[in-house]
Length: 173
Image 1 (tube, rainbow, N blue to C red):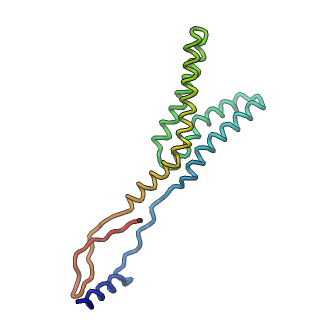
Image 2: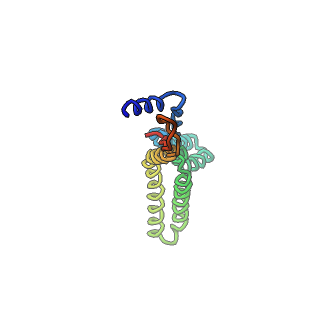
Image 3: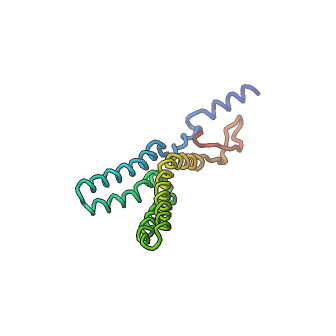
């Protein structure tokens, strides 16, 4: 009996029976995701600084556009497109609140100041969220990819005297 078990194990490990290794699932770097989010903010600030130094309004508008969209680059890289769109819209809405509150300053100064503060804190809060959450978005992507790459399937196992039904587990663990 023991010899039969050893022979079956040797037969299973032979190249003719052994399956190819499971392909490595795609992965995203947590460091790169965080760097893309923070780098977008740095790029926007640099562009804004250049706008101020040169007095160029188009550069200032471009800097604002980059500041609204670029912090979401880490989420886009990590495959969290929904987070990227929602947070970009959140920054755009916060900036819109700042503009509306500033235009109402002649009617109610206190209300305008509150609106500007809420808009500014919302704008900055969403930027901080993007920078902090981008690495975790990459981690969530990696977990989903690993889970999708693991499979259990029926197979025939060689045994002494023929084959027997069994299960094959493939994946990255």
